[in-house]
Image (spheres, rainbow, N blue to C red):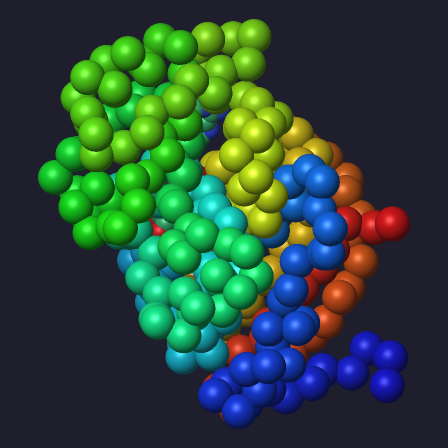
Length: 250
Ligand SMILES: NC(=O)c1ccc[n+]([C@@H]2O[C@H](COP(=O)([O-])OP(=O)(O)OC[C@H]3O[C@@H](n4cnc5c(N)ncnc54)[C@H](OP(=O)(O)O)[C@@H]3O)[C@@H](O)[C@H]2O)c1
């Protein structure tokens, strides 16, 4: 039925979910998927973190989307606040990735102007593949010296050497054949992608939770746009979470 919300059983419906969340076939350029969670009243965080909003279904989808991605792209504030490590994948997931011609583990790629990242953080110490640090001309040399072999530090500035240019980021990822891009935010970085018209789809989980307070939206930035997306699917589960996927209009 048009517009029906399908109930999903995490654990039983894994094959169907993998299909529902598969990236487009035969990509030649990067396809950028955003995966975010919001409370029912529009907050992107509870007590300053997204984790309090998540439920088991959302965690399962979070893992599935990581499993499908070639690279996980994230803003530095989220990395610091959520204490990111490298992606952790099971043996079965790694084997499936190999069969699909993907690297066993997708790297985390961090967008940062300051390159102010602690080399002792889990991002560098609990990972099998070094993260990509996408920074700007002004900070790239210092970051390379500080982070050494713990990371690959790349200048992703556009014309302005003082900030990272999102289109340049995607060009760099495409050159490395990292076309299935998953961004996990945060709101500032997601907004930059939206303003630059580079977000191809948004997978938004709506948690059945009210947070009130001053929590920000899932995208917050200076630029305003009007980008229409098309509904791909709506799912729910017994916990009352809503799992949506909206894709750029054809
Ligand atoms: N609800 C959700 O799904 C969700 C998802 C993710 C995160 N969150 C929450 O959102 C919060 C963090 O998000 P946020 O919006 O504050 O930050 P963010 O988007 O994660 O990261 C912002 C940082 O990215 C870097 N950056 C952004 N644009 C840049 C550019 N053009 N050039 C160079 N660097 C750039 C800067 O890093 P530097 O400061 O290093 O220069 C900036 O401080 C946390 O509370 C987290 O828990 C929620």
